[in-house]
Amino acid sequence: MKTLFTVCLAALACATYAWSDSGHGAIAQLAYRHLTPAAKRNFDALLKIGVEPRHQTGPMAAVWADEFRSTTANTGPWHYINIHFRTDGKPVTMNALDENVVWAINKFRKTLTDTRQNNETRAEAFRFILHFVGDAHQPLHNVARDTDKTPEGDRGGNDFAITPGNGLPSWNTNLHRVWDSGCGAFELPMRGGNPGFEQECAKLADRIEKAYPLAKLKEEVKNLNPDSWVKDGAEIARDFAYTAPEGGTPSAEYVQKGRQICTKRAALAAYRLAAILNAAFK
Image 1: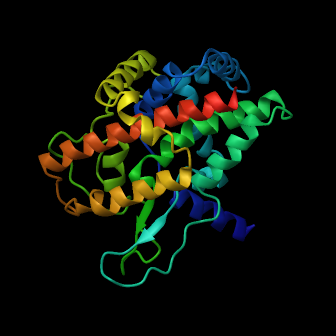
Image 2: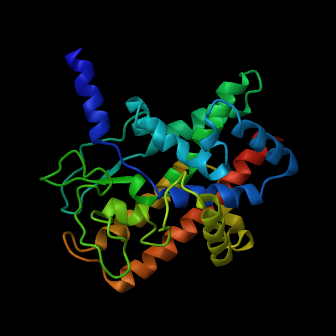
């Protein structure tokens, strides 16, 4: 019993959330616009299975996995992959967990396409896919910086303090939260489930699509390998995200560039999600 309790605490301690509710909601909204008619019919049907009414919209279905993990600790590691790195020249000794966001996407994509599975199992896989494809595109869900102070990693920047400013939301008190908000690009006045949430997500999806239409990303969208997605995200994190001043306020230039990066990553997540669902519901 003590061992189980310790494992649960460890899982909760490592918990990190990717993209704000609005980021996940907008990705789902934008993906839906690029579904085939057959995929839309399946999407709409699976929304209604196995969850309470508040999660029976695209944006709220995309948020569901974060709420589910709060009562199911073992699913926490499925939301990220820690590709460990150091900036002090010392060797990295930590490896990513076997069950991670890449593992989860591959697992639930297979379940979703397996028509021998019952509707409840496929609906759950569908909701996980909606969420985890978004998670995999958040650069701070792809890395952990190891230091002498945090030899097992900084939990994707959760232990990297930030002082908000230059347009960052007040809750952006660490590097992970900065990137959850899309460096402020995905900040909405309400959270998932509140009145007007779906409408605001649709407006955010409009902005993402206008900045990065499918035609502009067509070649990149063809890459449906989550291993590749997280390697790209890890490179962004190492080369740019961690250039923020630890304990200080990121510059206005950093925030602006970060918003551009996050907007593109969200667009890629939406278009790749649509491609996965179109293939699954062919």
